[in-house]
Image 1 (spheres, rainbow, N blue to C red):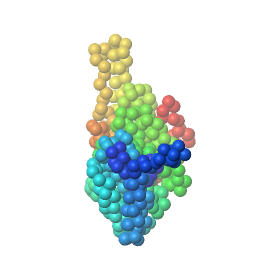
Image 2: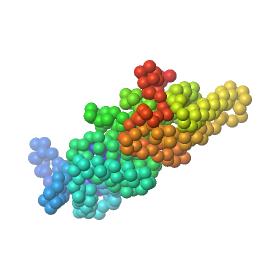
Image 3: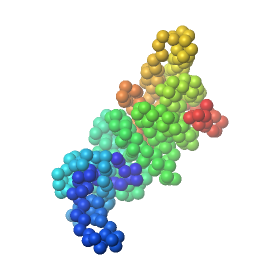
Image 4: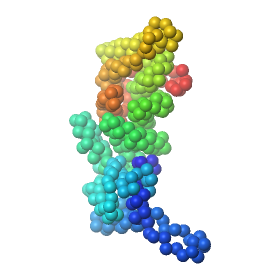
Length: 387
């Protein structure tokens, strides 16, 4: 799995490859008795990757970070998984030279031409433009290089942005396990770096929450929605707070905890401003429709459990309750966000999902939302278990 510690270059190999990359144990009985350790597992592969690093550095005059080589016993014996920056590749291997040749090709590909700090920002801006045009594969290539050079140049915010946006791309493609790994790393970095714009933290938490909900883990989703709500208030971003409330409401709806879902939707409704525009009216209308649908569902559930009306069949979850609301959200959210934010509404596994790319700062002068600090008198209650 992708290294949570953030190695830029990593190779995970199956047991047969690891054995082929380990020297024969030629210790004598006396050496063993004296405690001489056996040959290190995979030492031949480690030495080969060091040779590749030196070869590239001498030929092109560029720094190549160390390659992290690991035995992954969960892989088939002859399979190697390569992690280059944020990208991953997996192939069967018959000879160790295949691994070093592939690594050399991909390292040169991501390293050249070299990118300075201004170039990293240019790559991120270009990736966002590609997302606007729905050219997702091309945007992934830009993020890949941006992340690689951001870490080499200790540009924390750029690396965090790249990880977060690529995590969203993987959510959109349905590769949720990898998306969660990337977003977990991105969120951890955003909390560890004091210089990071706090506005990006709730975005990452929202994406992570949605990924967990889509994998059928509403409890994990609720923890992330709770973090997103707190981070949104800290960043004074009511647009993201609104998404945290409505997202948590959907997670509670998944759990058939209708009271909590309705309570959070009402909090979300309180965040909508009264401005001369149809957007707040549409949002409030769809929130009220969602609340009424959930209350009806709750009544049917009670009837089923008590043997009253509707006792013949358990109520079916209304999958379109939140879909109708989400269809109205992107226009309202975009109006309330500034900077380079790109908002996408995407169907993942039959569920509409809102993905935010770039930096979503709050625009007070053109918003359909009230100030975040006006809700809860300056303090957010915990979404999970805090109602």
